[in-house]
Structure formats: C-alpha cells, structure tokens
Length: 335
Image (cartoon, rainbow, N blue to C red; front, side, top):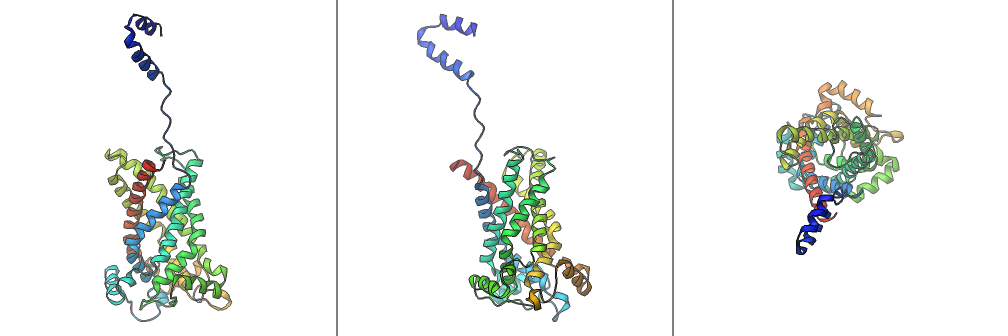
C-alpha cells in the first residue's frame, strides 16, 4: 500500500483514475460461485430426455416384452420369435409400424414419471449430502443408497404406467399366454380400476420396486463414477464422447443388475386376474421364478436379456447425451 501511495503521488494526474481502477480490481472480492439449477429443473430435464430416448428404442422394448412372455410355463406351441432380429421383422411385416410402437403413450408416461423421479431425486439427495455440481462423487459410499432411494420413489409413482405399457406391448403377439384387449390408454386405465380396484394398478410392485431401485442405484452411481474416471484417463473432459462411453458401460451394468427383476415384473403384470383377486398364474415374485425354472429351466429367467440390452444400451446413451445437452442449454439460457 505504501508503494502504491508513493507511485500514485508522483504520477501525472490524468493517470490517477486508471491506477485507482487497477488497484480496486486487484483487491476485489472473488467471483461468486456459479448458480445451481433449481431443484425442479432436473426432474423436467430428465423426464424430457427419457421421452426422447424411448421414442427411438420402443420397438426393441416391444420385442423384449414379447420374448420374456413367449413360452410362458411352456404353454402353447413353438416360439413365435426366434430372436431379436426375427421378432422385429415379423412384428413389422404383420403388425406394421403401429405394432412396433405399441404402448408408446404408456411408455411416455412411464419414462417421464419414472426417470424424472429417479434423476431428480438423486440430484436432490446429492445436494442434501453436499455434493455440488462438478465435485468428485467417487468414494462417496452413499451413492448406491441415493440411487436406490430415488428409484424406490420412482417405482411407486410409475408402477401403473409400467403395467399399462407391458399389457399394450404384449397385445397382438402370437405367443403370449394372456392378452388384454384394451382399445385405448384411457379405456385400459378405467378397466383396471373397475375390475381390479386401486390395488390393480400396483400389481407387481413387490418386484418392480426392487427392479427400479437396482437399476437406479447402478445406473446413476456407475455413470457418475465412470464419467469421472474416463475423463481423467482420456483427458477428454466433460464432452459428448465421454458421455457416450460412460453411457455404454453403464448400460451393461444396469442390464445385468435388473434382468431377473424385469423378467418377473413383466410376467406378474401381464397375467390375468384369478379368483380372490390374485394372479391366475403366480402368487408372487418367488412363485413366478420357481414355476419358470421348473417349466422352462434356469435360462427361462434370462429370456429377452439381449433385447433388454439392445433396448437399454441405446436408451441409456440417448438419455444421458440428451440430458447433458439440455442441462447445458438450461444453464445457458434459464439460469
């Protein structure tokens, strides 16, 4: 300060304002931290990203559902579909584009409700535990628990829509033991409430909740960790290539984690209503698994695994890449 006063006293008067500006800028307070997105932003962005992704991957989801249901308890004749490619071809040629996009409206409701709650809840919990945007999440032992907690919430909110999606996608298949003849989404919703009551919307929740919790905990925590390590290893930083690679690896982990739960949930939700309000084929998840293994062998539980990954892999990539781009635009224009 002493030297600044000395030099200022000996400078020409016309330079004094510039000296004052330089001195004040050097002692100015540090720039404020970047603003965070609002708590509701992640719910909106995640739900929108998921709807964009499912538009392109729904045909494979239709195939996945039908492969999981074909040959149920070894009923009927031979399998209608020999694999993913044959199923896509057969559905496309016999049922057309509408057949490949069966259940899309229910899928939109499922994706927006489920993914917005999973990602939004996960983001909220990360804030609550003090993990700020850009901070390293690796080493946080609470990541899996955060994902599981947000997934459980998402399962409760979205179970009715997964039920509707499954039944719509199964309809029209030549090798599904029970088909529900719904004419529209509204008619299906009203019919379930009238015939099965409020609890009918939550058929299969006992296995759907673990399915979503397992998928959510693995997906969200794996993506965070893989993205951090991949960025450090490649030096690419937070770019689209990093998002693509992280999503690809995450898709493998999620498919393996949720396959048994997904298979069981599909069969429980598609079965018809039996006497006393219970399912006509299975009384619960364990009964479904036991009867499947007895009638179709242990590999029966893994029906549709390839289709599950071919659906979820691209879906995961599209969701995360779209989400990252929407986050960038949101931060640029709306904060």
